[in-house]
Length: 392
Image 1 (tube, rainbow, N blue to C red):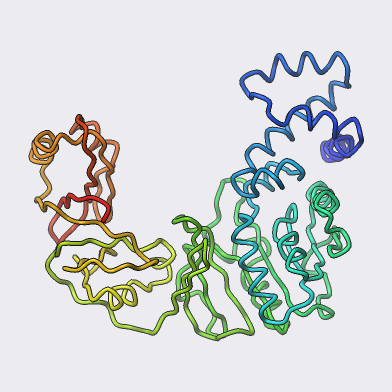
Image 2 (image 1 turned 90 degrees about the vertical axis):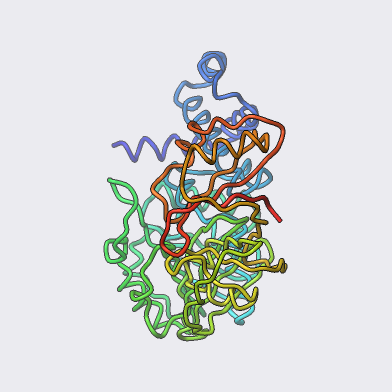
C-alpha cells in the first residue's frame, strides 16, 4: 500500500497544481517549512503539499549534481538523489560512448535517469530500465521535463530479464547500497558484478559503473578500468568493454584530462625536496602515481605513501604542488611554537599514513594570526613526520 500511496503522491506533482506548488517552493527556506506548509494547506490538499515540500527539498540537494537549471525541473526520489551520477561525469561517459560510434544504449539500473539524460543529450537513443515503479516514473518525468522523451524509452523491469541485443552498447549501474549502507563486495551489488560482466561481454561495447575502491585484482582482463574525479573528488570507477583490454586510466574533470598507465615500477624513495606533490585521488586509485612521478622527475617520500617530492616546480594537472618550508619529526609542541612564530591563523591539515585526525591537531595547536600554512601529517622513510608548506 505504501508504494501505491507514493506513486499517487508523485503523480499529483505532475499536474498543473503540483507544478505550480513546486515553482512556488523553489527558493523555500527549510527552516520555515512548518509555516510554509500551514499556509499552503489552506489552498491545496495536505498530501500534495507534503509531497511538494519533500520534492522541493530533494531538488535543492540535487543542485550539486545536476546544476540549478536542470535540478529545479527534474523529479527525484531520496535514493535517486543519493545514487545519481554527477551530470559532468555522466556527460563525459556519454561522450566516450558517442566517440566509439555508439548510437543506442541499454541503460540498466537507470535510476531516476541521470545517465540516460546525458546519453540522449549526446544524440544517443536510450532504453532506461529499472525495477522500482516510483523510480521509473521519476525517470519518465525527467525525460519529459528536459525535452528528451523522443530519445529515451523508460521501462519497469528486472534488468536481468531484458533483451539488449538490439542495442550498440550496454551501461550497467548496479545498486551499491543496501539496508545497512554502502556495499563493498562487488558480488553483493544488485545485480552482482559477475552478472554485469557477462552482460557487458555480450554487447559490442559496454560500461559498468563500480565503486572506486574496487580491488584491482577483481577487474577482468578484458576490461579497461577508468577512475574518474571531478574537481578533485573521486566519483567512480568504470569498467569499459570493447575499448582497450587491460588499460588503466585516470580521468580528471573538468577537462577531461586522462592519464594512461604504462606499467611503471614503483618510484624510488628519496629525500624531501623543495616541493611536495599530492596526486589527484583518481590517480592514486588507479595506481598511476609512478606515471606522475616520472613526469615530475620526482620520487616518493615513503614507499607506501602517495606523496611525490621534487626539487623543481613543474606544472601538472594530475597533482597539486606545495612548496615545503619546514620538516619536523612529529611533535605537537614544536609545531605549535613554529605556527605561533609564523603567525599562522589559517591552517590546512592533510594526512596520509598518520593516525592523527586533522581536527584534533587543529584544536591542540590553536592557530592564530594573519598568515596561512598547510601541514602534512605523514611518514618520511618510515618515520612520523610533519611537513609544513603552502600551495605553490
